[in-house]
Image 1: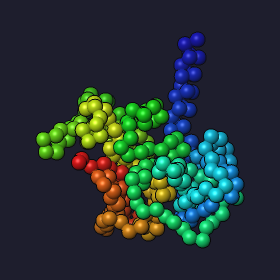
Image 2: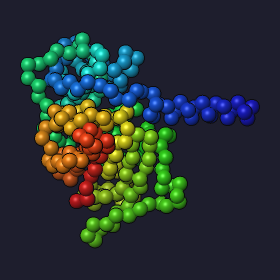
Image 3: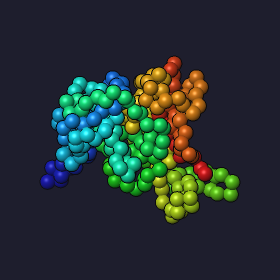
Image 4: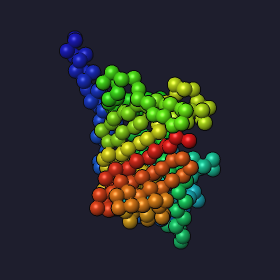
Length: 258
């Protein structure tokens, strides 16, 4: 009985981990930036695959969708709700009609998130909520070394943080700017996201392995650039693409201390 229980636990652990990082292919899509009108009710898909439909998330006729990537008969992009929030995912080409003019939005506060079939990872969001979906497949190196937290200071303020490691990305959770947000000192938010493999894409369809021209196609002229990086700033947040011979090697989303 004990052996059977261990086997079941092992199987559950494997499938839980696979759902976090190994159940979808690496990003290898064609950049295709266009604005679309929805012509038929269409459902979002988590990947460009018929079997990944989300039956609870859909657009209706005349909704506007901005696409950034193409794969087979699907377009990856985003829809902006009336409240300004963003829905990202894949829609079927057959349900979309390309408009005459492509309206790509200016870089703004909705651009600080990473998309994956396991769920979006949003800068400045609650680390506790994020961990409910991703904690089962992560590795918290701070706990392994026995340290409760590290510290960072600016002026008279001292903040604490943890670095948390997953297979394709690193999350820094911290309490920086807790007074500004009216948070408790012990509440942690996601304040840095570092993407280190090409299974994760930005909200405008950029992933590791793409080139600097594709970045500018999607985001427009950067706030700053150098030989090894391109950066976009909005308020105290920064989106940076680290380059090697004009090819993206890392993507960093970071909140700065106010």
